[in-house]
Image 1 (cartoon, rainbow, N blue to C red):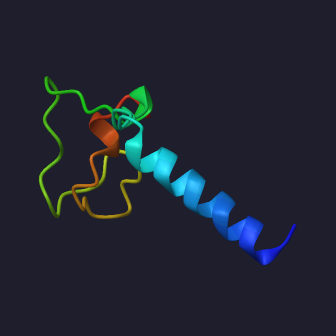
Image 2: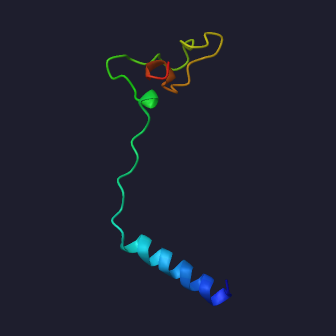
Length: 66
């Protein structure tokens, strides 16, 4: 493949991507969904997952991943 052929191929791909309708943004995995009915632990109190560490409001304890 020559350099001109490669450039043409790249231009064609870019043009097709620009002209194509944009796909919707991927939805987050259900394991990262936060449960709204559960209140997270207060900042500074012991972490629910690892009590030796203070809560840093990561949200893991109120997610489907826990």
